[in-house]
Image 1 (spheres, rainbow, N blue to C red):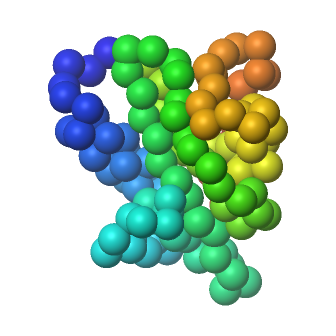
Image 2 (image 1 turned 30 degrees about the vertical axis):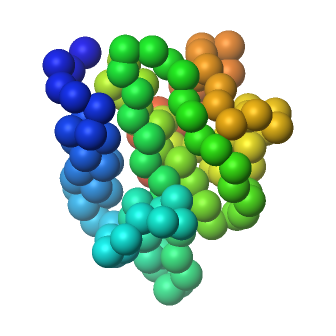
Image 3 (image 1 turned 180 degrees about the vertical axis):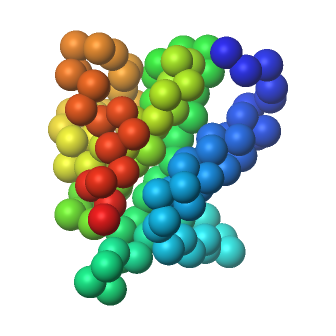
Length: 122
């Protein structure tokens, strides 16, 4: 686990995901203001875009997501204390929330298929 304050940890998580996206040759666009729950936008080969919200948590696996409308081009990159990146479609996160604002990310959610699953964004 990283030893840093909440604000710095959030920034670290965003840059970690962005660095991985660059490693996989994604075109990335960063909004100047994050007031719509979008930390970065990627462009697909066909010209369409995907929106990505990046959330990191330490030391617990509780993700406070809040209210949002799921859509096919909206994804979450979740970084819990194991420091892995889980790329999850917004429809799945919405289901995990079950009408609440937060959920606990746990292995019972069959997470393996979401580890570094950047291919969903292309």
